[in-house]
Image 1 (cartoon, one colour):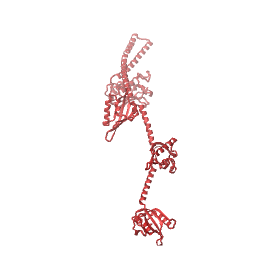
Image 2: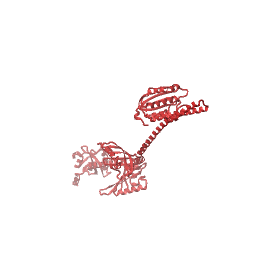
Image 3: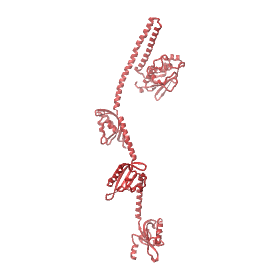
Image 4: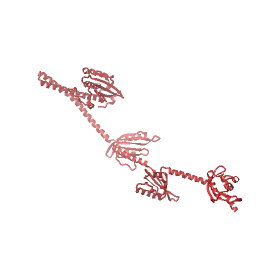
Length: 621
C-alpha cells in the first residue's frame, strides 16, 4: 500500500500536495514544485494561501473549511497559483481528506496545470464575444435557422426591427415572425425558398418586409451551411436594406422616362461613344431620329453612324471625328443623313473625356433633328426675298406716283387762276367753290410732298460720314427762326452736341421734325420751352428732346409713329401726321430706336439712341 501511494504521489503528470488543517504544505511532489517553481525544501512549510491568487483565495479557503468540518467530502475548482517568479498558473484543483500521519489531520490536493487550456478557452471566449459583437452590431438582418425553418438565433437588428426580444423570436418558424409578410403569396415564397435552401441551393431575391414601425425593401438571401459530409445542417438568412437603392432606381427610371419623352417631343437624342472599344450607345430618342430599332447588344459602332451620312458630307464628318479622337477637340458639326428615301439635317455635339495620359476615351453628347428648322429657314429666306422684291416695287411705285401726281395738281391750280382772271368778279357761291378747290389742291400737294419725302428716305442711298451735329443744329435753328420768333420759343441746349457717324441730311430731318413738333404743340398762351440733351454709355448715344407742351396721351405712344397718324383736327393743328414716321424711319436706318417717355406728366419727352459705330450695327433696313 505504501508503495502504491508513493507511485501516485510521484506521478509526473499531476501535482500532489499533502496539506495540514492549518493550510501548511506538509509534503509536495516534484510535479507540483515544477508548477510553482519552488524547490521541495522551499515548498514544505508554505501555506497554500501564500501561493494562491488573491482573487481566488476566499473561495478556496471557504471550501477548505467546509471540507475540514465534514460538510463536504471533497471539492474541485479551477484556480490560479502565483509562482515563485510572480507568474500566474491556471490549475484544476481537486481536494480530498487525507490520512493522519502521526495523528495530524491532513487533506490531499491534486493539481493539474490547465494554463494552456485556459488560454485557449479565453481566446475562444474573446472570439465568441467579437463574433457576437459583429453579429449584433451589423446593420444587416442576420439569423440562424434549422433546415425546417425554425429560428435558432437572431441578431439585434432583427429584434429592433420587429420590436421583439430574442426570446420571443427563437423557436418560431421563420415565416411566423409577426407582420413579416404582406400576403399569403409572400409567405409561400419564403417557405419555398427555405425548402430549396435546405436542399443546398443558395437563394436570393428582393422583397418588401414590414417591421413594427416601418417598411423596408431588402436584398434577401438564404445560405445553406454544410457539415464535413456535405449535408446541409443549418441555414443563414440575411437581409440587406436596399430601400434607398430602390428609391434611387425609381427616380432614375422616372427621369429616364422624362428624358425619353423630352427627346421625343423636341426631336433630340443623346449618345455616348466608348472610343477604345468603339461602342456607340444611343438613347431611345437617337434611335427614333435614325428610324431604327435598338440593337440587341445595346450599342452600335461608329461605322453604323457613318453609313447614314449623305455622300457630300461624309469626308467632312470623318475629318471631324478624327480631329476629336486625335486632339480632344469637342465634336460639333451639322450634316445630312439618309434615312430611307428621306434626307434629314442633324446637329451633333459632343464633349470629350480624357484619361490620365490625355487620350480621348469617351465622347458623349446630343443630336438634334434640324430638318424642320432648315425647311422653315429656307421658306423664310424665299419669302423674305419675295417680300423684299415687293417692297422695292412698292417703294418705286410710291415715289413715281407721288412725283407724277404733282403735275395734275399744278394743272388744277393753274386753271383755277385762269378762271379767276377770265371771270373777274364772281358771286359768293362761286368764290366759295373755287376756294374749296384751291384748299383741297393745297392739302393734296402737301400730302404728296410728304409721301415723296418718305419715299426718298427709302430709296435714296445713305451717306455715312462723321458729322458735327452741333453745327447742323445751329443751322437748323436759323431755318426755324421765323417759327421760333413768332412763338417766342426758348430752346435750351444743355451741352454741345457730339460729332457722330451719320447721314447728315437724314439727321437734319430728324431734329427738324422733333423741334417743329415741340413748337407746334405748345400750350395755348405759353411760349414753348424745349430742352435738348444727350449721353454716351457703352458705345450708344442717347438723345433727349423734352418740351412743356400739351403732351401725348399714353394710349397713342406707339401709334404716333405710324405714317399719316393725326391726333388732332386740322382746324387745331396743321400737318399730315408724317413727321414722327419720318423720325422713326431715320432712326431705324441708323440702327437705333425712338420712343416717348411714359413717366413725364407735363409735355412730351422723346428719346432716340444711335450706336457709336453705325456701320457695324446697321440692321440693313
